[in-house]
Image (cartoon, rainbow, N blue to C red; front, side, top):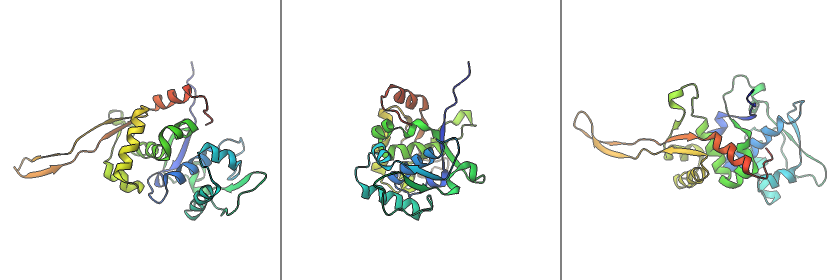
Length: 226
């Protein structure tokens, strides 16, 4: 029996790890990249139902939505500056070539199954939770069977993403509660090395992404739109 192919959304790894992108901006960009692949004929010019997209992303006001779009334009992820939203008809958004793998052969991309961007997952773990899933995934080398996890400190994660360590810990708990990730915790320790010198040892946690649990969660949900 053939295995069903899972559609994955690829995002430039430098954007995944870029603190200049807020979690909200990152999640919006991920949905725009996903929208690029929906039509059979791919086009960097997207015709978006912005009201539906805002609902999907739990954005309640136009100002926040436009603020995110402005940030994506200023960072070069989209090519057209959007100052007004249409009252009727679609919102046209022009994606930049470098964020699409097929158009940027030299770029490095991080991919995850599209259900990570479902409305239910976003509601369950928030924008930061989605961002953390991509961030941890960006450091996992699946070719190394013995190490299909990433190890990164909470402080490093916080610095890379422009958030606090408390925020990292908070959203890691959300991800663990849903069983989207498994964390093998390695506590910090003090001790003596082989030269009998007192040193400070610090070990990073090991993060395993539970792709099967994310899929299971989405299959049980009633509003999966991804």
